Amino acid sequence: MTHPNAEFAVLEANKAAALRLYEEVINQEQKLVIDEIFAADVLVHDPFTGAQRGVAAFKGLLGLFDVAFPHHRVVVERAIAEGDCVAVLHTHHATHTGPFMGLPPTGRSVVVNGLELFRFADGRIVEFWRKDDDASLLMQLGLLAAPPG
Image 1 (tube, one colour):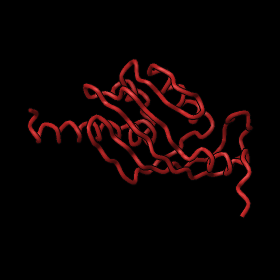
Image 2 (cartoon, rainbow, N blue to C red; image 1 turned 60 degrees about the vertical axis):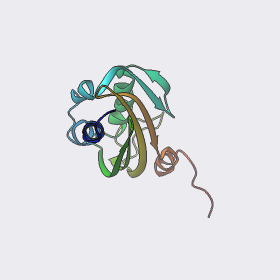
Image 3 (tube, rainbow, N blue to C red; image 1 turned 30 degrees about the vertical axis):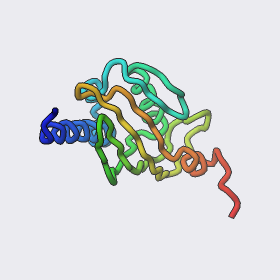
Image 4 (cartoon, rainbow, N blue to C red; image 1 turned 135 degrees about the vertical axis):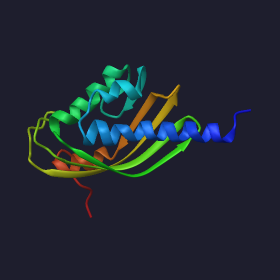
């Protein structure tokens, strides 16, 4: 049986690794950290790109947003660790100054809430689900009509 303190230490280490994505990779733009926290064969789930395997898939996904929303920032509201997973509730703040999904830059500022799930093995992210509010993002950019109301 694993000692409760050891389990707690793993949970906290996993949470800290997930939070490095937001603070170091996104907010401080330290892209080399990606290779430190993600497994080489990570499985990335994303509504825009589908399921893809490999750290290059994650880098490509982040690059899609970096091109369209350079220097975007994120605020973490809550991080919860349980078992081999970490969930992070967060809000992105960005300005659309590059091409995105066929849309030329609009100059619009956007605020997008999200919830992402990370699965860990041996201290590295082995699976990642991006569940940002893409409908809200597309509405703020004018690519999707807002619901009547």
